[in-house]
Image 1 (cartoon, rainbow, N blue to C red):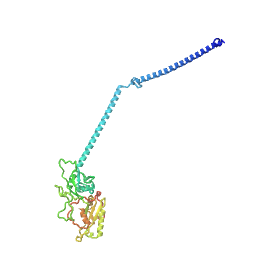
Image 2: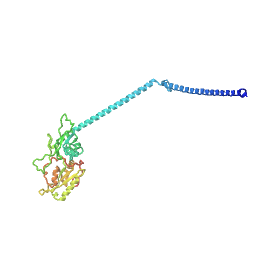
Image 3: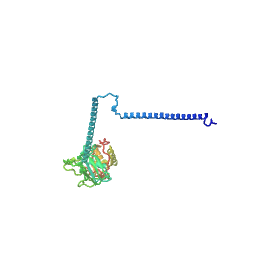
Image 4: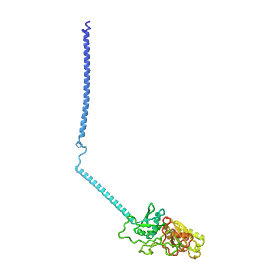
Length: 394
């Protein structure tokens, strides 16, 4: 009994087991402490190495490039200065070239502006204002033909280089501007003031911006225009006459002003015109010739000669064209030509005389025709060069 209660073998074994447990616990704590110690040191060493690398990187960044060793050998300072000077000279030359180019461009722009101003000023000197036009009837083509017809005798070649360069009409149709080839032509065109066109007297004057010449105007060339009646002549046989010529110039210097109506005389004797078939053949031949090369024949008539007219007198044919320039071309073609052995004569007449002839009137055209009525008929294309002769014409 006493053996199991604390004495003897049973008590010694219990102490031994307790001692073993305590030893194992101490060993376990030591192992844990050792592991913690080793693990913490490794982490500390890793952080230390990282901090060392960061310090080296910062020192490398702070270190200036001049402190690094270069792989290239040192250069000669004199060679470097020569290159720098060459580059500076090249840049200076480029700047000078740019400056010269800018100066040339500015000079060209100034010259172009001066030329444009001079051209505009010259245009004002060669331009005339035309007002009081009939709205809806008068157009730029009619104005061009009017001034070309009136000034045709003042230029060497009116067909190739007509007097009018440009004609511009206001959108309202009340007025327009006609540009001539020279200042002298513009001065001569001033005499067309108050000429009747389509039932109204037009106003011709200088445009805004016109500058009076310092030495005054040169003596203008003569211009003849119709509109003045011939004293003592009957109304139905009234031949068109010219307007007053500018003072100081001889009357022989002026020529006839073309109209749309042309009278061709002496093609055949009067006796041949008494036959209707002969009259029709004659009209067909003349119309075929006059319709060539762009001319437009609006009407043609051959009145029956009165019985009192001599058979040997010259017959006549009246031709109406679409424009005065076409009649002028036909005048140059027909006047003086031979038709069946007869020398043809041509004259300009008015629209009223063509209407009378178309109605059968046989008018007296023995008095000389000075000029003709203004260009108020329908416009047409400009006349071409004279055509080749047709049959019967030599």
